[in-house]
Amino acid sequence: MGRKMVTGDTGLRFALLGRLRAWRGDRELELGSPQQQAFLVVLLRQERAASVADVVEALWGGNPPPRAVAALRTYASRLRKLLEPERAAGESPRVLVSVPDGYALHVPREAVDLARFEDHVTSAGRARAAGQVAEARARLRLALEPWQDDLLPGVPGAAMDAHRARLADQRLTALEGRLELEGA
Image (cartoon, rainbow, N blue to C red; front, side, top):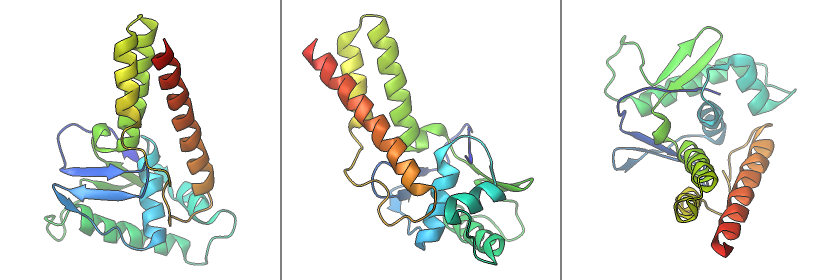
């Protein structure tokens, strides 16, 4: 929803296939309140900007607090400080940016474990279609490696349960594919 494809390494990495985690280089980042974490998950899930309305709906559903937009601005400000601590006052953000009516997160696709999972699954499908069973198995093993049993524990939000269900379905499909290939 808010992750834009960029080139170059920001030094940031994100994990969504278990507990939400982020690193800047080798240092794990403290991601703040559960609602702030939910805001980050919304931005990391897809590769387009997230409108304010989309984020409010994802976090609070049809019952947002009276100051929901102000809360989003606060979350964005705190995350910007966390993700770009070297950014000088007054300098435009490069990672978490404001776009017309929303926000976008500019990190390389490979910085997000969910994107790597999807890429490995896609590669496995191509390998399988080409008759490369061993390569397909290896790709599915790589895809499933970072998964943890509990997806995004403690991250609230109206849309998080549906997101968790989609992730669980994707994992199950990959597991079934791997088991099928291991029997081949």
